[in-house]
Image (cartoon, rainbow, N blue to C red; front, side):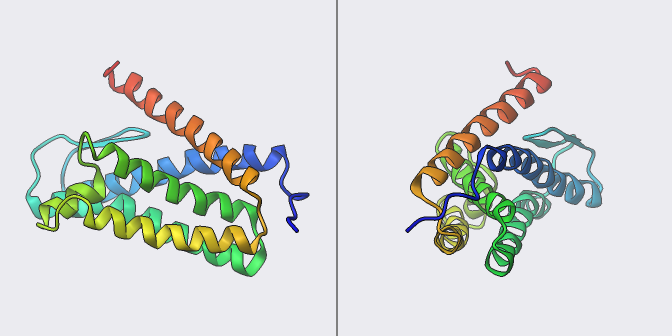
Length: 179
């Protein structure tokens, strides 16, 4: 029997806020590493762009920073779900997975973080994205089962994730003047 009594509309509001925060933290990690390496970098809610050419190694480091922080936060959220039954932590974990799946999907057209790194290392564009997705998918499934969340809860989380992702990407494109 599923226990969805705890999951109401407020969960999805908190979920949306956590999703926006995930973008900001992910991009902040890219920015921080780029700046620490001495590059002028511009920060957007869905992009960080170096102002000058980077060495291959520095590009890998800056590209890895966002996904590394996203994965670490997702795994810390998994621990919080397992220890404290935290729905907010589940939202953080779920959205971390969602972000990395979307990034992999975008890589079909334009190599994104993990795909770019994987390709630069000679592993092909899909090795690293696949590994990151698996590392987040397994704990997300375990957490969902641990919290006894229904498919409906997870489908609505997907809808909220999609709406937030669309809004963030669109706002970033408007801010950057690309649409």
